Length: 122
Image 1 (cartoon, rainbow, N blue to C red):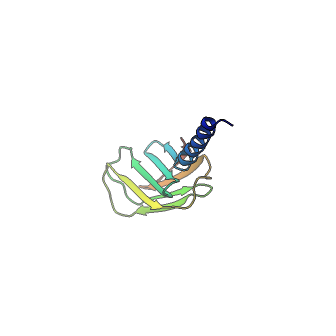
Image 2 (cartoon, rainbow, N blue to C red):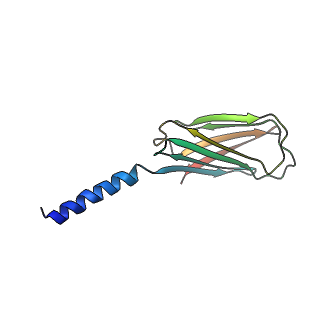
Image 3 (spheres, one colour):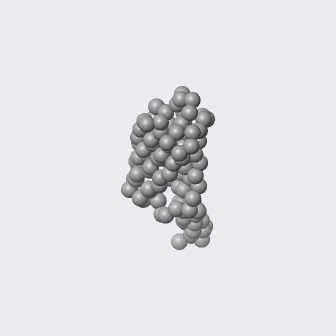
């Protein structure tokens, strides 16, 4: 085998190995009143999500949320009365979420209402 071909093969393999290990997995979705974006960084094993209120109500109370995926499960909430613009941002170390399904559901409750967002991988 030619020495130049060997060098190209070695560098190509290294390039693919390095950049395939640093991928992010993204999910996005939106309902009538809420939008959400979630990112899992496989290189740092970190999960970040942002839930935004995009509705028209003046106050939000009794807010709860729950993610339901094959692997991803997270939940939280806030009992206080809040005024828009309302946004929750969360960043946390996480498990190995590379094998999560293409769709993750997010159920949101607030002001006696409920919406479910199907977040699709992008």
